Image 1: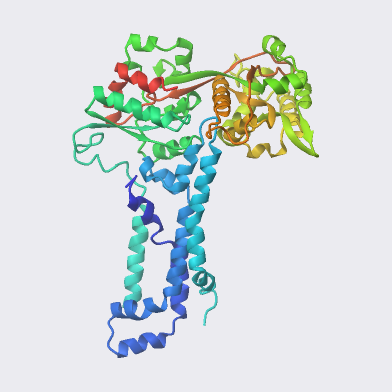
Image 2: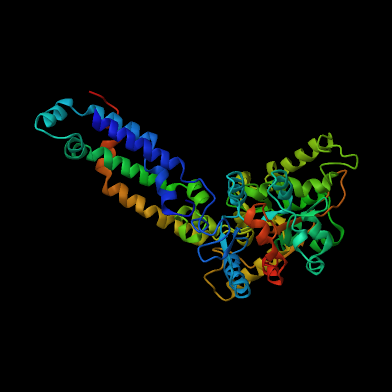
Length: 141
Length: 372
């Protein structure tokens, strides 16, 4: 799977941290809602997709933001699995401005600035979810 | 409960897949024709080549095209990895069982991969004439016993280098130093004179060595040669670095950092920053020095002269002067030779690699061993 998109994406599809975060959130959902859905005739998949998921938008947004931020900035894994220049992530590519005895600081810094932009945009546009979400699994009951 | 079980099962499956994403040596092109061949029946040769210089990747592309004109049945897959991290990538690939066929390494790395059983003696694939293309001594860096485990790309005698204008301002007779060498004490006096203070801050340091990244070890290895330790082992194969003189040497090295001749942030200065500080006039002398720096400085001077935007930001014209490494007490002048070997050079054992090694014997493989 080297040098493929699945190699970059699959390792972060499910992480222990996100599973724990989601689990904490799900246990905070009132069981009475699920029981009501069952009484109304919902099947198990329907309960998941029509009841639990809509109530979990906040935690899903938080997981999406945090996963994106983490993976956007990560270096080592993409460095290992990407062999061609075409597949290199921006963080890996930026290091290619560093040569044996010299470094092109100007393009490297320009690239670093550009690479920060998506994070700024994502964070500020979803700031509400982010601030709400980081504490969402902290208090139970 | 069923919903929870279903989700747990899906999550477990996804995590299982995640754990396997980096596995396997395949690149998606080896399945049908067997390892080493793509779907079109071409032999695939993989090469891990870090960007040695700014123009390196472009050169590689040209060489691969030229090679493919003569050998259309061979596909060369070039993998790039940053200079600082290429060894780490190679080690991971080797340990994962999917090493490249060719890799760029320093000659000092040969024994490591040889011990791992991953290096192949390529002398059997080279003709006498091809071997004669290389200087015997330089080629020797890639020999181990009777085997040859690489071909050199370049050879450098490592030294230090200075800014001519700054040296002369500090009253250093650099021509005499070039001809007669200098002692550690003379060197320390010189670099103290090179320090320029402005508004309470150091504007120019006397000396600067890259002490971060892969070149950091050179701070020790280059100087230690001139401190009475030309080799870690003596003629009786006894380890020499446990000699009490070593402590004095290490204290001398440290003293250059502590006395203000070098920046205190030395541990954060890598090879690139070191050269940047040289070109921007922030240091009088840099280490290590290579002959290619003279050309690099001249290129930057030319760009400054022409108002080229590619010139290093804030740089000044620098007349780069090559200087010998100072001699420490009890030592003699010794040259530290660095041979980074190309790798057209470094062939790994494996079903396809042995077969592909024959391409090294073609005249075109000179492309891969004369890139610089």
